[in-house]
Image (cartoon, rainbow, N blue to C red; front, side):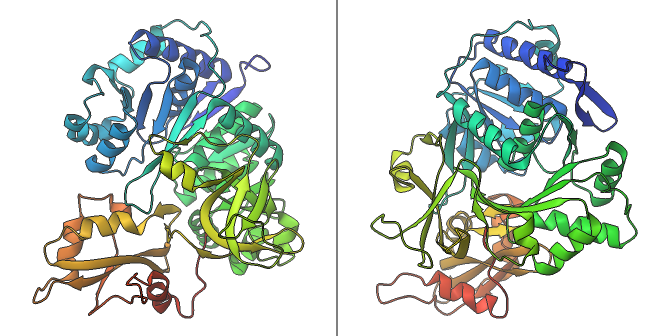
Length: 498
């Protein structure tokens, strides 16, 4: 900000904010939040769609020493009540379109005072933003919590991964270095910034002094228009977005939109060979990379441009500042070629799961942390994934955990037992399918079970199909063979990994 205070910081729907405007607004808001009674360390929920105000609020929470807790705006009240209750949130920012969701959860949130709920763009939010003092606040403690990202778990209840200020700074610095982002870059941010990946890309760009072109929602034709209008130089997309963008170009979209594009990062699942070929044709100047990681560690490996084009089918080598290892059940590092659990080590680790020391301990082995995937390292240090230990479903870039759906369906009176697996989906990559065994003599239709889920879990987590089985496959110990069940549906398809 000091170097170029009047340079464009955020472009959004025809409006532009400079670095001076963005920083001073965040400072005033931070000061106002402190004066409102919120104290350093208090958690503040954020339930809203993309806007410059969302990024300002994010920055204001950091400046005030508050803990930002982004919420998926497709969450149902039960999700919001659990997350904000779990982190004991004392404040919240909410978009007008989502006020009804937080109101429906409020009775279950005794720590959240109604006067500490700020509607984004509302009178109380704007009063803090426009009339507070733009004076610097006392510095925060580097290892104090800065954000909590909730990630679904195998128990069916989300876990809050806490990131310290130092952890956030280390990630932004290392990723900015790895990706080569600088003050000359114009970065399109087309996805929801409640996601750690898209918010991180926006914050890296602002930290580097570049220009963020923020979209409210991803729409491929509009994305192409913005790329051409602003001369976008760098872009992060999940694979589904990439496919949609390529389809828009093939249908006659602006083929010159990517003339300035020098870098494109994908993450979520491996890029198919035909998609990669189409990307190279569409954006011949762009260096393409494919990243892999999980919420707690961030991106830990990248398959870089030359490796991708050379036909390397892996999730790449360790990212800048990160180490990779494959460990056996006893925590010993395995040699090249042997399959075990994938672990990573960063210079600054996440703080652990809020209020869940057991889950924190389960993810760590000394300096190593794991997301539960299984794989191996080859002789050149490339990481190859072979299976997902935690059974997560990746649908259109969203992480969906079977246990969340299973927990809801198990409450249906006609259901004896249920297992949810990811199955091939031409549009979303994979989607949840519920495999259900009914109570003896009971009857139900798929429509009845899907209707039962509606309103109890977010719509993007809803199973898109139901199979009725006489019994679930089990091993000698009675454990459901989820992998065997999943493989029935994936015959002839490549199982997707994160």
